[in-house]
Image (cartoon, rainbow, N blue to C red):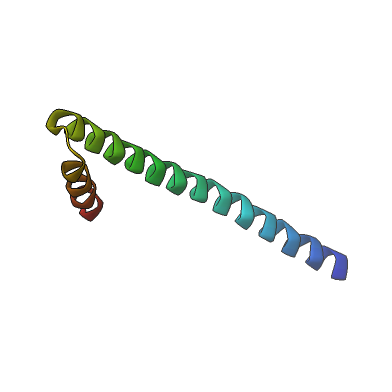
Length: 65
């Protein structure tokens, strides 16, 4: 009985860790994609304007979204 209980507990833990890992990967990919997009947008605007102050202002504005 004790070994069955331990096995069930370990199985539940492994399932939880597997699901947690999948959810974590999705969240990390979403944040990384969002950050790269905002950085790209800031660089495009900076390239059009041509100075560092506009880049800093753009990054600050994009971080507020």
